[in-house]
Length: 280
Image (cartoon, rainbow, N blue to C red):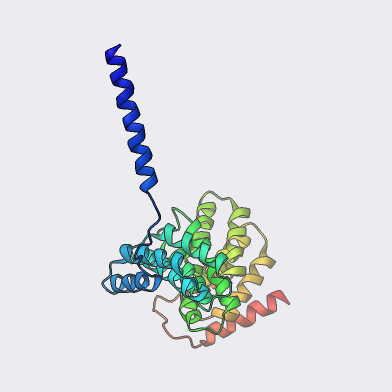
């Protein structure tokens, strides 16, 4: 009984103690760091290339700003800081959130540009994973259509050319595989994609030549001549043109010398005239 009474007294004292402590808890204002100070800390870290800490401070500053313009600026700086340490997924998440929350912000163009750059920099090997290439291509096209006259567009146009060459390379790789196993229809379809979508790439001449080669091989000479005419009209000084000439004129002997200039030789002009006559 004595032990029981002792335990009850101890519990009672603890409860009173806790109750007493709760009564003493009152709200006291603290000297919180202002959003501007947080942003300044972020900028100092950013300039020192301490991007992880900078991103943290910019995010904290965004939450503290009552002015939407300042909050938006802090948000995009946080995203850029994450990009600076190759935290691509996190940076993209921040940019996506920024675009939803601050659709009228003055830095919206840069946010779209940075998104395109992040997609582009994630391109590794198009033979292994085509998804980053497609995402980068779509985002760059979106940017160039919406903001064609900006300074950022110049850089993205160059990157678009590089991507188109990669996409064309992918199509050519697959087309050659189909050719190797004599699957002519899927090979033709792949080559046509290059002709229609990527005709400014380095693969266009070979694609046209392969189309001539396949159509001639399967007995569709008229179609072969049509593609030969396109190749002859646009690229009649190239080596693929000479290969095409060899298909349609068995007696033609390809010169071993390297033709580096784009001037039309008499022989090239003669062949071009023959092709035009063939398809008329």
